[in-house]
Image (cartoon, rainbow, N blue to C red; front, side, top):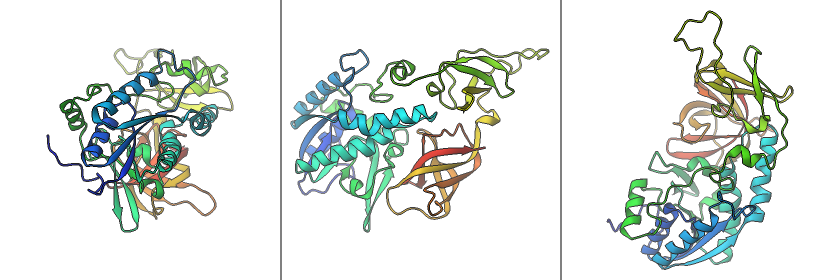
Amino acid sequence: MSSSLPPTSPSSARQRIVIGLSGGVDSAVSAYLLKKAGHEVIGIFMKNWEDDDDSEYCSSRQDFLDAASVADVIGIEIEHVNFAADYKDRVFAAFLREYQAGRTPNPDVLCNAEIKFKAFLDHAMARGAEKIATGHYARVRQVGEHVQLLKGLDPLKDQSYFLHRLQQHQLAKTLFPVGELPKTEVRRIAEEIGLPNAKKKDSTGICFIGERPFREFLNRYLSHQPGPIKDERGRKLGEHVGLSFYTLGQRQGLGIGGIKEKGAPRGGGEHAPWFVARKDLDSNTLVVVQGHDHPLLQYRSLIADDLSWCGPAPAFGGFGAKTRYRQADAPCAFTPEHPGTGQFRLDFPQAQWAVTPGQSAVLYDGEVCLGGGVIAEAIP
């Protein structure tokens, strides 16, 4: 194994660095790299959810055991800190409000801005930390007086989308030790040094939902009113269980089959899968269309609000944008907010699929993540 550390690692001067240890392999290897570089490393396990800690879906207890085992192998102190009250107030309440309003929020974005890089950062600084670190696949770079947020070098793992709401003071205090590494190398390092979680599966989904059925979870917290499912011509196809439980572009869990037109030729596209295209809150109607490429799923523009920039706000110009995680940057024309509106507009030369209010529109200038906003309106 190479003894060199990733370029984003701190300088050789010894620092006190508090790292978020989640129980996963990425934060574990990050802690190892920092310790190997000679820093004083303290691990913090963040407990963000406790409503059903003993259920089969909640893995926080096992995650803490894994994090503690990692700390033991690496030889660092670990502290268990409960941020559940902060999480419920700052993240979960907003999550429910957005779903109740018919939008689809991204709680991971809010969790990073409000918990991991605010409550956790404050706690770490109170412990005398000079920097904090996490296992995110992203990078930071000092350019003059500003700190840039960069994409992680592994394009399949880049997590800058989820970090785009971080401000200068947060970025200046943050390290991402695995941001320069491919995931395969992170796994290899973990195995080579004998980390107990070297082969642990990556966590998926939202931390407070875990692997449980999403609708079952939301059903506990959201009021819901069934209503009609209709196609774009107004034909009723079935009943939905409540608009809050669906998102634009959704294909699974609609409970409707294909419609075969009278006289339609055999073998045609009449049984193409259905996708959610609209949620009409006024009439409590879910509008669905057949086919992934249906025109009602294509959007040329969007308006975003609740803006947050990593550095200076960008000016008019051409950039790349993501309207959902795991999509390639889409070329777009950026129009900055008009004074007093708190909004920006993106126009795409190529239509974007299922642009969803509540999700984040994140702007990029090459590898630099500029920030973004929450999609307020999608325009065909």
